Image 1 (cartoon, one colour):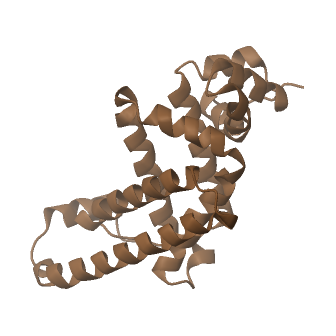
Image 2: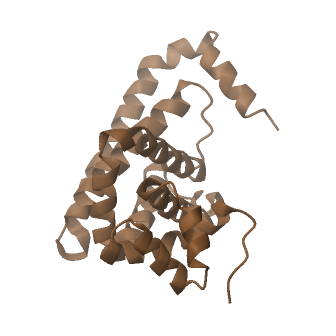
Length: 218
């Protein structure tokens, strides 16, 4: 029986995990879309229409489904008792564990995202995932830190994915060690940045004002 969806975006998100499974064999293609739709009882022609933007739309749906699963499994209150570095490590590790069964799909996705014409969309996707992680980690920065934290985590996550894609060590030990080193480096950088810039925070900051407008006090 064909499922009904409130929007094409809802259909795309629902098909995200199945697309990753199909992309292992069919690549990020219409064939993968049809296979994924069949596995979920969704009309294949409707699914192809929903993904008419091509491979990047398919990859975005997979990433979006990971973002959604992460938010459901690790809400902010679950992470609140952890230190910030443990929150970030837990969030990134959750994503890696979810991707692990589909490493060939990941390798193909990374190759597509690295194409020059896809770079802007890839950067936006990375930013969105980094933003989702920071929000779950409890970040409330409203000044330039809002942006630098997401840029830094996006870079860290992208680098970790690149290592993970080719990691054949037991239980992905090499990736885990790489992630730990990168998080430690980020934490040291954030601490040094805070010490350096703290005296300036007493003055007026346009970025902080804009951030407060985005997240008004409750």
